[in-house]
Length: 71
Figure 1 (tube, one colour):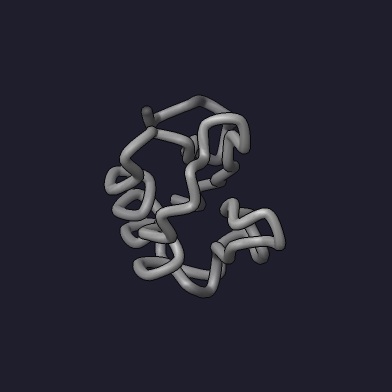
Figure 2 (tube, one colour):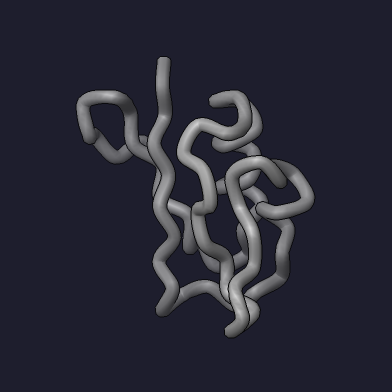
């Protein structure tokens, strides 16, 4: 499966947990909020793990058909 991720910047509080888990996909910008730097830079398992550790559920994960699978 090729998961797609996006960050809800209104929710993001910049804990960088996602960056620690999936550093090839996420980085913090100059506002200390997470952004997707490269789609599918990490494995699907890492993307889902990064989304699940976000304390404010700011990472949205979709399947290849665009269906939201998390949160």
